Image (cartoon, rainbow, N blue to C red; front, side, top):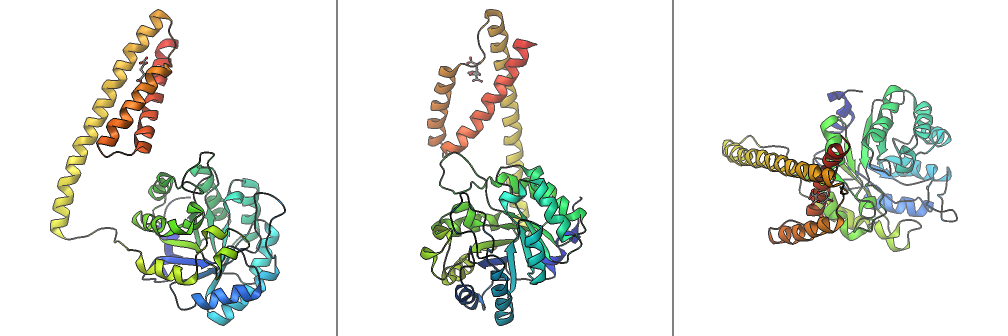
Length: 360
Ligand SMILES: O=C(O)C(=O)C[C@]1(C(=O)O)C=C[C@@H](O)C=C1
């Protein structure tokens, strides 16, 4: 699959003057709940009304969705409010039912994207559809697997495609439910600049008080839209209560978000930007120069260690360096997380370099 302008034509055809918004409850619970939220969202920026009908839960015994019955409720939403509808599908049977109920947008969840068998089954069932199909990232940060999902759909002549970034699972405790790893989304944009890219801040944060900030970051990174879980009574939602917002809160978020343009043609802006970018170019060259010098010294240490038969990894020395650099970084306004990432990468490269020397 190659990038092409045609990939974003379904989005362009909507002629929106704001980011695409997909909102609605995590799960359809009752007909009344689904309709009540929908009516609250009717005259807002929401383009697609979402509701989970089949819910993949981490452990059995939790609410697993109302099933096909909920699709009828979504049909009523469309009839009564005019909003288009969206739901998650996870197998061929779901696809069949969703198409029979004229759901406008289907998405493949993170736990399905990890399995090429499931994605293929869904792609086969959707062959040639003119519905919009979005693929959430797999739970693990694997860009090829994510794009593989899109390619399986594309090969089945499904042309209204897009991706949803919902963050990645991690064993580490972080402030996020699923860490954003924005770098992956940036890489994806580099490969497929015209593939519509939606952010799901609800699953990234797992907490409603962080949704605005993550949404703003997404827009600053040129995302095309947002999927935000919205519930009339979030605290008493049957699933993912902590991350849902009320319809009023959603409207406020949409109002407060700043939408920035991709670039500006004004001459003074471009001159100043050009000057600053020239500075960045020089600094980047110096960084490479410095890193290469460091690697040469590391190589000399490797030669020395080889002569004396000493192990490559020296944890005590390494921890001293890390501690010092974190403090140094802090003084210079660099976050601990950033310093750790950079120096871990440098250390790994230094080890690889010495390994080659010692075993060469
Ligand atoms: O100090 C050493 O012994 C080195 O080999 C250098 C270095 C580094 O790159 O800073 C590399 C590997 C060791 O684990 C510790 C530090």
